[in-house]
Length: 343
Ligand code: HEC
Ligand code: HEC
Image (cartoon, rainbow, N blue to C red; front, side):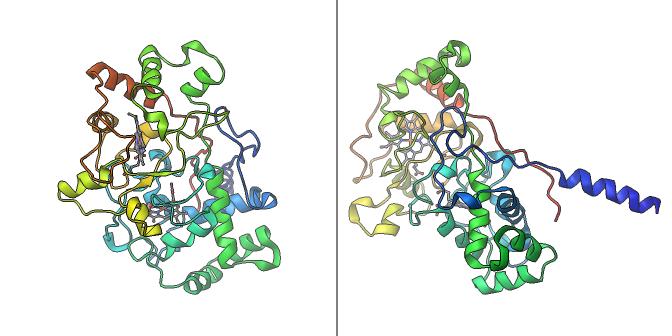
């Protein structure tokens, strides 16, 4: 009897964690509004289910890997210290885990933009042999139907439709859209006019970012809410440099379009929270922000298809440090409080 009471209390404490659903129109200072295919499904039940799925290793073929293994909440939803991600049975993938913070605003998914929406994206890691390794959608749905709790949770979220291919994708996407992060030092300085929100080196860094260093040309900063990305694909010379260093070549956007001129072009990533998401670039080949800025200062690499926007920047050592300081000012509030999820 005494023991039962004890367990009752424990259960309540663990499952009380709150998941904040951001305001769609005004998610946070510095961010645009969120576009959602079906607003009525952006609710507590669906996002909570998506959260549970996101953290559940049961979704992988042998119960060893969850989405959060490669997108770690405390590491800006990336995997620090890991150049390339590794999936089931330690199989090494060919790309670095990108952040999922502010993924609600991305106009295409993956570094080559090969799918358009979160909903379309969701099943890819579940089925990829070097990620979660399942052999088919129906295998996964069957497993979920047999696992305690999921039938009820899907019914609560989607009514009679219950567990299905599209509902699983909708739930995972809804959870990921809660991962907004704005209100950074930069946002307070730029959008709210708080002069002392950014220190002086960061303010000098901003002047370089928006001027001599040309960063703004791809990491766009114009508009009432920005992600520091033009959502386009550019060849900045990373893949060519990696090939010269003996790392595997990645053809990037070309894989999706087969257009010759898009060889080794990659999606411009957001720079929000970039201080937390090392290592950098699609292949994690640059370990620190300073190395990234030095790479740009030298004009990228000698790739014959290099973007015409790229070129040597003639930055001084102090300029480089100031740009890094500016990038550090782009870390925002984290809407997400990482609860201990019950298995
Ligand atoms: C084995 C590691 C691994 C696992 C497990 C994994 N991911 Fe990823 N994720 C990656 C890598 C690496 C990429 C980049 C791949 C690419 O661009 O081709 C990525 C890309 C993404 C993107 C696109 C981000 C962008 O900026 O375009 C989303 C969204 C995403 N993952 C969500 C998920 C979800 C949801 C799950 C679980 C169902 C998951 N991931 C499981 C490693 C992983
Ligand atoms: C020609 C377009 C372009 C310009 C100019 C540009 N970038 Fe980038 N940036 C990109 C692309 C594309 C990537 C991703 C490349 C890859 O993954 O191989 C990137 C990646 C980055 C990353 C790594 C982000 C991550 O999560 O891995 C940082 C940091 C960055 N850029 C900062 C800057 C700064 C600072 C400048 C100015 C000195 C700048 N960029 C100029 C297009 C550009």
